[in-house]
Length: 146
Image (cartoon, rainbow, N blue to C red):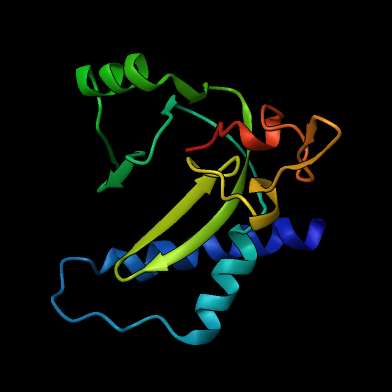
């Protein structure tokens, strides 16, 4: 765990240096080794939330240190979909992808829960029905991520 924290502390300044040249038109592409190190660092990491995240597929975007949507649009999304996490809560980064020129994080399982093929099957005998995938209203099937 200590090695994980040290690697995170070393990686953050490297990311700052790598993205400080954002004004230049040509930037060097990320190498495969750096890509793997980023994924290993951020995947399944526990974080503390500083702002509310709305439920749903839209999420939040951080560009040049500014969060969007913000203000009234963020409050509208929170009223419509509800909060995924609140400030001060602990969340787990469950998925980390590098998509072109941006990083994509999913927290607490993401907005949509994927189901297995066997969770759609029901087996019945003598008038009773049972689902081999378990009950459909358990926390696994109730998405709470962003």
